[in-house]
Image (cartoon, rainbow, N blue to C red; front, side, top):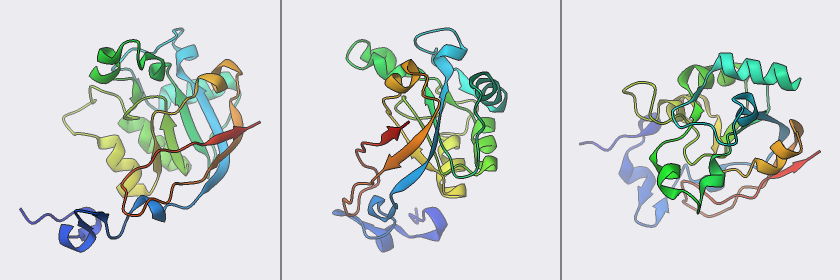
Length: 189
């Protein structure tokens, strides 16, 4: 195995035991953008959306229309599913699968030119996967289009307040060589 990764980078050239030498999370700039929350739990009439439920262009457009929001270039789009509410209450279910963004939905949002996509789920995309391709949504968003992924977001308060549009502010942690980070974004209405 040659250990060649994204953009032709060889493992020895960008990573070692202490972390990434380039392409680390510290390179991500702060994000200040318009935020849009899509309340998928309300759309499906449940507190917690069932695992395996995919959000594709049809569902995304229906929820945006119902909430009276438009997804625009430069937005951060967050999905509320109620899933994070399972933590500590039903960890087995929480880790077994999840509702989430589907392949068509990822392509739709990338086509809109969003900056980041997030959800109150641990992996953002629908599990089980829609096809045999593993984490295809991640591949579409991050390496193919540079669209950031935000996971385990606490979207409950925004959904309860019907905060469908807001100013999204995120200062990214500066941990050198990390591939992810614990974040604390702020929604300002």
